[in-house]
Length: 496
Image 1 (cartoon, rainbow, N blue to C red):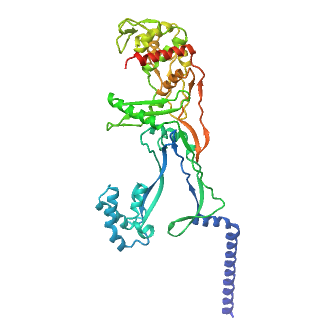
Image 2: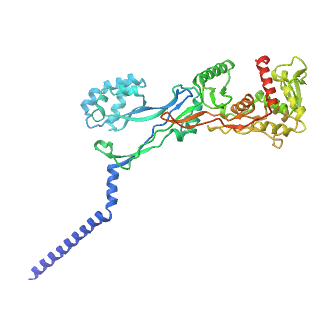
């Protein structure tokens, strides 16, 4: 009886334990199914489905006559799965020599032996994402797809093709710095200034994992299609740009110059028709590596003399036929000696002649004699022309101009006024100087230089950029007419 009771007790204990275990399992099933159900479903989905970002196609940049300046083209990275399911040792060994020869012949970067060795090493290391070649062009890809092994595709031959987009400039160096780039260091040019319009809006797509680690798109109500970027129509005229670029390079070579720039602006509109920036590199060739037209604020030198003359003309201090004593073309201002580049033919020159011969002594003498008692009046007049203020361009990187006041720490009551009058102790960019000269040609109206005419989408204009007036008139019509007379004299009789 004692033995029977002991057995029954153990059976009852076992039954109770099994019931409790069953109850625990039922509770856990209920908790997983109803309490944590949504969490585990999402976890499962995360391993089998995903939302993948779909990049938009970047817009193109065109010249004013519709020629392509910058566009996106497909380019490919070639990789190889050396352990693809269908790539047996027999197949690999039978084709590796031919594949190595084909790769060497196509790319000409390694010998066939080097290709063969690297591929064998990659297979021995069980590489499944081995990089064969970066940045392969479309035509090269089509040739490569016919190579031994690669012609069998991914699963039998191991070929893996990864597509990406790169920006291409069909006209290469022409206006390349102004067209710009979205580089990692610091984006520049039109590409940077209008990036939000060019890049478009990315979308998203639901994808499901399938065999081989591949993903296929799924139709989903939450799918968002990408929107292509808009196109930018610039003001640049390729024909004029080509002439400007070649002429600039020719003269830089002739004068053995380190760098230089050229820019052409349409008078009435402010549209930049050509802009060239060249610098000699370490190999002795001239390349575009910096936008000097926009960014380099430096002493303008003799190009500033027109501003000095216009100030005196507009204030009624001089007439073109007035005379000024220049002596032998030398004059001292305090400890500093000023010399004319071309010795004058006569000790007295008319204002017209002094300007035509770019006489440092003549121009500085005019300004010192009229403004020495109130040099700030001269400075204020210069600033009233728009000089000394940024132009507010649609492209970033404009150099900071400087027309200093008499309160500046480096102002000298003896030498600053005469040297400023001929373009020293000041800083301006070439484009800021151009905007000033353009205003004289435009009957006094100063317009803002701009590089973009329109933003378009599939040929439809979304936004136009009209002429922006910075100053209605920088001087009186009479003074402007006399300033143009001075400049005409430079062309007709001035030194080359």
